[in-house]
Image 1 (cartoon, helix red, strand yellow):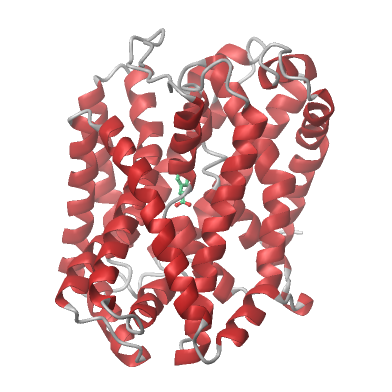
Image 2 (image 1 turned 180 degrees about the vertical axis):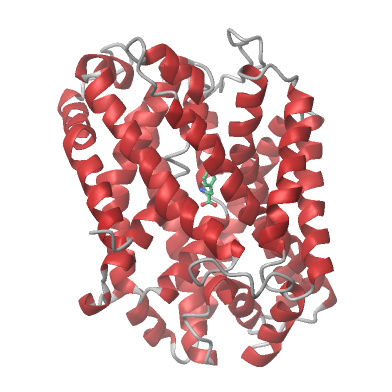
Length: 456
Ligand code: PFF
């Protein structure tokens, strides 16, 4: 189904509508749902955060995602070349693509470490050492992993070599095919976890925390974090969706695909939340545990199920696969740019990306051990990468992508791109999205950022 691009790169045009949906979903769904959504919801007060996150997804996330995919489909190249080709002569909009590449490196530097924890947990789950509902036991197990510099580094390198191997052997498509088939099992497991969690003593407390907003907890920084999560979740603001858009077929319905991806992604996060928070309240975990939250609570839920240990192994294997899919989509941005723009061969571009990540990622890997005291604005290198990418780089990327479509590209071209050359008749919707992109999204993102960062 591949159709070569102008650059000769095997630009795998997706062959079916379902393939497009599955691949786009494969980028969006990842540790963001299973790890980041629960930990941020817990740390930011629960339901109020969730409410703002959903609003940000609708008002900012959806329009920017549609903008990126339609730009990518028209440009049919990496984000830098796409923006260069579509921008009015002499205007440096391609810088958005260059910034996106930096964003990808920053995200990969800490994401690879979280993937490393998930990989390590497959082995820990097999040994059975983490299956317990006692917070002390599960916290100690997680603590032992992240505070050991050698283990943290080795697992991260393992992840990077694994991902690099997939890219170098050119089996990305095979991995995507496997991911597509296995994700329904992950979904079933999540549903099972929800059922178990909902049967726990203090399930109601968990649900109230997750779904009954306490508006007093919605501060400017909570709003910024929720918006950052919306960007991170949908893989937008840094060119990933633009790159994926370049693989879209010309007759693919962009608005519909985007809405479906957003809805499915939201549902999966919700399932993760329902699986985790009842257990948090029942067994006495701290909702504010931060990045550790999922790793310490999920074993407690599995400890309540017959054959829990085996199922927990399956869970972490499937989570590893979901994480691999998201990581591959992240790597695609620097690799394609280094290949198409810098002229490196694809294998060289991959090796260079991996080598840079081994160096950059080690700061995140050592954040809970060797570099624990090394803080910037009170944050460890891991937290800085996590915070700066989601709350600064992706939103700024989002502002400029919205401004580009709203002011430089214009309604006619956007509407042509979104409506498959006028074949789809939802002009009103397209106009509404364009209005959001031209006025609402950029202003909203800017205000939220300035307030959230206390710059204004
Ligand atoms: N959306 C992915 C997740 O939620 O795990 C993470 C991600 C992938 C972010 C690709 C950004 C990106 F470009």
